[in-house]
Image 1 (cartoon, rainbow over the protein chains, first blue to last red):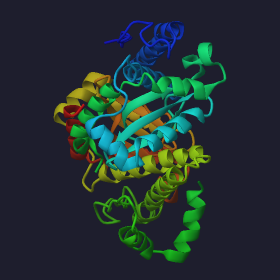
Image 2 (cartoon, one colour; image 1 turned 180 degrees about the horizontal axis):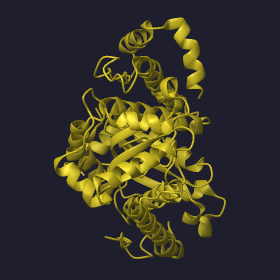
Image 3 (cartoon, chains in turn yellow, purple; image 1 turned 30 degrees about the vertical axis):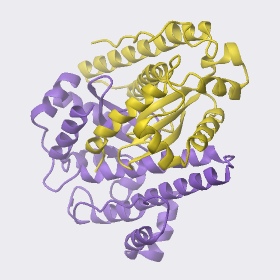
Length: 206
Length: 233
């Protein structure tokens, strides 16, 4: 019943030299784990409230649920969004859709980088498919749970919390983003997008 | 955004022709992408009486919901322009307006579809089983959903959704339209707790609005969304 930390899909040093081993280790084993623990705690507290029928702290636990639950999901996808030697660009339907919605890959890349670099405080740049609007969007998520496009299906995400890059890049956010483009798992993102799109008409709100 | 203030001004000026006009504009404008359009109200303005009054339903759909659709189109146009010129200096603003208005449109579309005359009662079948599994009982679910709605800070929503990642139902307390959400959550049942949703009839009495709303919940619609979300997740 309790949520568990998904294992890192590669070795701690697999993304060197673009993403350093020490940061990957701390990021996965400590930060990601803390979100899993936070999610479990929020769920336990809500179960307690349901048992007692008393909800004095519901705002607090709703906030914790949204924060930690989203943090866990985003980090799980973040690890999947990277891989050593996983393609230099998107393939198939994802390549076509990026062209259709952003003009070309460079324009997409430029907007995604700008969205990442300008995140206020902690947050994420995310590429997402909207089942309702049938197009791709770049969204600029704050913390883990704010500025989210409702029902957006995430294709790939880039962590812009300082814990994600500070040991190696300190205040040089653009350097982190440039480094990250070298380890984007385009093969994985392309396959993920294909699956999302296959089901997207059915989950669209109408 | 000051929708309420804008609405008050707009009501006096444009009255009933407003929604019609904005839709025909959307249909005729030549744009590189299909413009988003306001989803039609799935019943008459007065269909939900006495639980949801015709005047609020009309303003809520024709003015508020329409404004989110326009805001979404505007944010997208600005982003297209920014990509063309390469000037992304205002990207934070357009990202914010995209998340706010896009989510506002989606939530309102579900909100109106989630209600029906002769609604209410309790869910049945697999949805009911899942509610019992995840919340203990229907009563416990209803109480938690009501509490989540009544205690929304300022403007927001109570949302019952299916998490494809965690394979269970959650109630989340969304702030504005785009904050405090659970990532990936598929919304199934949403209750608007912005003041524009209930103020004309209920003023400060939020619990009464929520109690009234339970009478018009369209459970078959919620069950259909649940079946589709679970099948495709």
